[in-house]
Length: 123
Length: 289
Image (cartoon, rainbow over all chains, first blue to last red; front, side):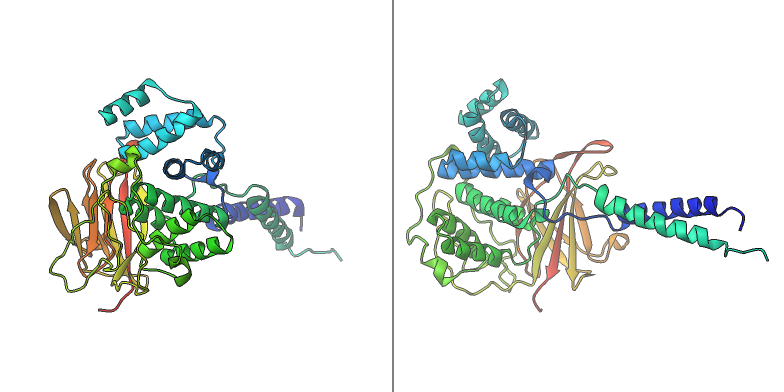
């Protein structure tokens, strides 16, 4: 046996490669107990819409704000406003947009687009 | 005598060490991070909060199709019973009666009830909310897609809707509606390779795809009948059609299934740019012919 160290190094790299493929691709760690903040943007939008609907139902802002906190958005007002803009642009269901607007008001955010939407919907 | 080492020994030793270190790295130190998960992956308590939100939203806007669509995302095959268990637990925990009612109203629509929870249900329909959203939401029960079918796919015990479109909280009999197929999954797919959004239907029985199943799709004043298995390269139990934008579709299997209404495409962003979402509905056989 002339060169055991290079052979061991080759084996090590090969093993490392195999293990990374197994660990990251074939059997990756699966998280079943995730948080709301890890939801896909589509579901985050749906979550916010539902928080707005529930707020509309019970008028409990503390509860609604607590639920929104789960999204861990650094600027919640801006995030909600952006979601409203995206929803209007995507021609989303106006009821959903209204639920979000219901959240934007206590968060103190609005925009010309939102005002124009509200005006168009009420007219 | 010269000492001889078996030559593959170092490579095997290196391999074992590499695999061990690699797995530690891949599973413990730097595991794959999922940032865009679906609600079915939520922690149990957050999932319950999500379910409660869905039920409260249903109480606010009365949109049953949307409620079903949201609940399907949770991947719970017995969601009605799960919600009723939550309602019973809410009683145990002394939570607000409104919470119990919102949960029970949705469980009832799945034909699930409980004597304990029924006690908390109002005997008169709730006053419609004066909110603008509720005023706009005027859901009406969709007419049966197949009036001539002998099976009744919609539960006869489902709550009637008040004039303002709100569900009346009438306690339901315990009988569960008999359906041949149940919707078990509803996925939204942003496919980079496909410019047209597809409404895809897959029919399964014991995890095997079932061919020749008639699927009735209605939208606006039009309807189409599809049969699974006409594109065998995509699966024996597969059928699809192209969806139009801003058009809600209702889908039901002719043999008797949940009616999935409000299915529609929406803009999405794929790796190849903006696309329209395809929707895949999976039905599984639960009854006998």
